[in-house]
Length: 96
Image 1 (cartoon, rainbow, N blue to C red):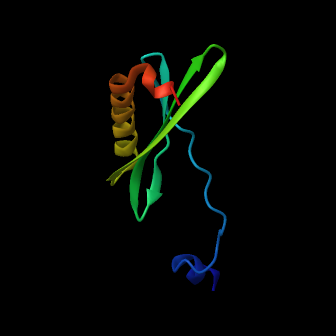
Image 2 (cartoon, rainbow, N blue to C red):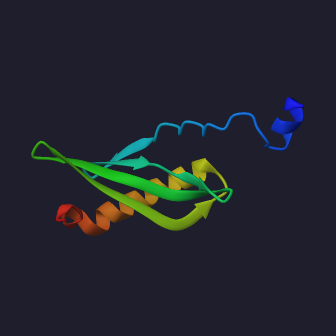
């Protein structure tokens, strides 16, 4: 019976699986962490940009409407979008 429950999703592990660690890249003195998440069977573009300034860590979170079939594609595009945000905004990103 437990085989059928697992097969049809009627039991088994009810705990959500632990998210994988966010991969990061450095760009323009900032760190971009890719934090894509599954949404209706696709991977949503999501990330966090951080920067150390005067001993203080500042963060900027971003989510875009773009969704991808694979987590790797979402990570790659998150890095692209994060670099674009840094390049277009410069220090204005940290004014708020």
